[in-house]
Length: 556
Image 1: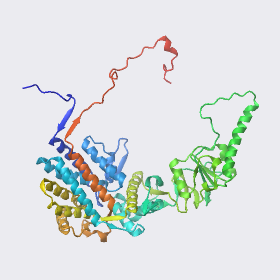
Image 2: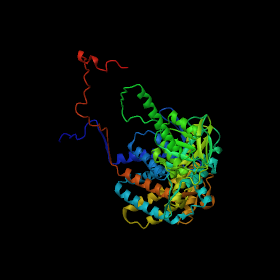
Image 3: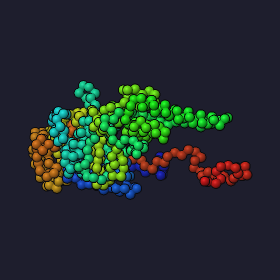
Image 4: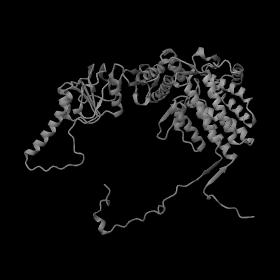
């Protein structure tokens, strides 16, 4: 017998083979179980305490997983799933995790029977292709301009969220906001940039019913000199700058030596004249409101207020872009380059209002604005944060529909149809891949089953009845009404999902399951390579007389 050869260092742990598969599957099932109860309209909320002691109360799958700190690597990659889903389509973050967990769960049986992971993956990918083609079959197109349909759709997305109890409120906000900022790209395509042009302002106080979408923008600023400048201007002419209206300091420190005393006065006079010049260039265009992203000196403020112009300074760049989009102004870098076309005249009203204990400037009633602000009011910070997250989801759904106006049934009906069709197809598949393919078909039932569980109905009975209805792939629109747990026709109940949310969910879940199944070795405990010589602590330096005038002796 040879003595055993050590390849890995002692400090490394290595697990391999089926042990790893089981560990990964357990970990992802654990993640799926955490957020399983947050699926559907009757979902529970989770309360998470973060490190700084703040609390997050939410049932948005992505928001929950974002806050969790996980040790297991497989569980971490499950979290990535919901993040991808959130960034891609904004909804279905919970379903994607539940589905991926279920896919892995059904794969466990095959791994015990020593199936090779690649076989399982091949079957899964085949199932994915067939599932997407089934989706294409049952999807129905809608008219984007039909507001009622859109409303029903967005409502079914938010019905599962905490704000579902406020009914149409959030759905209305989302549809209004997205239809304002939609830009036609031609060829029937519409692009909606939620991040750039829809700002959500949360102001605690008031009640949720006071929320609304402004036909314009608001920002948390007051005019520079509140007493002298007008705070309410109808049909303002707006000029946006991103240059400072103050004397330009030199780029780096400049020293000027003055020989005569009068030169000092000349210097000051030059500064004043420079500012006066700037202001005159601006006032040539008779603006009512000047907004700059940089500073505005007292002198400039004086010239502007003398001319009856309101001014706002140090505005965020993103806010400035929004104002430009809303009132049709162009942001100008240098006042001397101003043209008539740069002045924004699209706004109907500029007003500074006090909400709570802060001043907010509103630029509203715009003609055809391409940016907007959603003003959310509510009782507490936590409530507002949750409402904002739900609104984010709702806007994403509205955006998805505008981009790709196809619907599939909600309430687990889609998954059941896909499952039934895959079961039918599985009989025509030859060889060893048939079993995992069928298992994937069964895994799709996790979504309707979880819905039924969260409603608190008899799961087995409900599922059997539903499977009976869907047996041959007919009745594609029959699913679970998430509020009552009753079996209902989704068309009548207006419970719909966006096609690309569903497609993305299936793709993400199955691809992730395949990836996790293919891991067969985990090596942990790898240390980062240290640069040579970094290991020893630096020797304390003894100060000599020569360093005595060094700066570092006494810390300030």
